[in-house]
Amino acid sequence: MRILVATDAWHPQHSGVVRTLTSLAESLRTHGVEVAFLTPDGMPTIALPGLSGIRLALPDPRKIASRIAAIAPDAIHIATEGPISLAVRWYCARRGRPFTTSFHARFADYVAARWRIPEQLSWAWLRWFHNAGCGTFAATASLADELTARGFRSVLRWPRGVDARLFRPRRDASLGLLRPVFLTVGRLSPKKNLAAFLALDLPGTKVVVGEGPALTDLARLCPKAIFLGVKDDADLARIYAAADVFVFPGRSDTCGLAMLEALACGTPVAGFPIAATRDVVADTPVAALDEDLRAACLAALALSRDSCRAFAETMSWDESAHCFLANLERAGVAAPAPKPLHTLVPAQEAARTAPKAAEPAIG
Image (cartoon, rainbow, N blue to C red; front, side):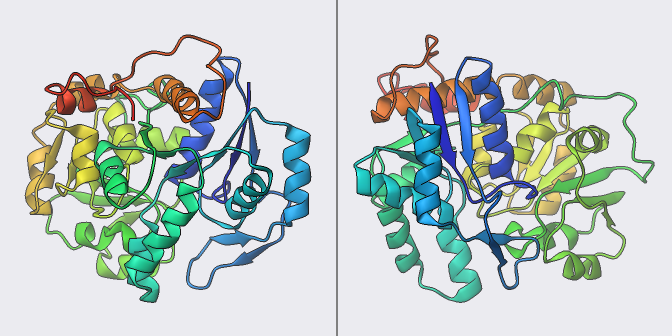
């Protein structure tokens, strides 16, 4: 089987979308599934005003059509809502070619906050974009429920995973900083709500990994915080393992992949009790969630690092990849996967849906 994935988010961006897609491809390839990416590589791009490091591709629809024809995919998946994805959507619509999509970011909320475009217009456009496909993949149960309530059709659950071999506890991990170390990782942008974390009165040291347009403002807000910039995977794994608490201050995230990476390193999570965070950790004793973020950070210090690791080990990219293939089959855009599919219910989802055994495991 050959799958084409179209995405406007790609290297050198450091984002959950890029990590999800590359991890998906690696897992699928081990099961004999070939993944080809249609990305901004080789295309002219323009910088987006006010969004440091983000460039928008300018695809030629005719070249897009030629590249798809050359790849000859068995299934097409559109991962983002940018120009490349629009061009692939147009290609599929013109040829009556079925495709699936995935919903990674709360685009409507972000646009409304930054450019004052009414949310209703953005959500209407998103429905138009995604409902042309045969299925929209959502990372969490609450996101899937919300999209369905907003008029998205054929919403299917696609849980994320974590590489527990790379992200693992390291007893000798240390940053040489005053402890406890409170860590956050992600793009430094207003939508990540990092200011809520940096404004807290906490003991020890605050550490921030990532880059983005809000760096100057955040450094001014908390001059004692340590900003480490972007790190490669190996260094990032060591930093996670050296932290005492991973702080996830976002309120509009759809998944929180960094939470799984931190937990795999044995580092407990602190955050607000938003739907995306609750979906990841459920009621397991690996995170402290509170509207008082400072209280959550301090409570997380008492959580078991062994429990965090054990929880993360229940989720893998291999299971995520199997679920992706199952969704393609259920959406009717691909033949059955080359290997038998597992019935997948991630640990946190199982606890949530246990009383409803008659419901499908995926979707």
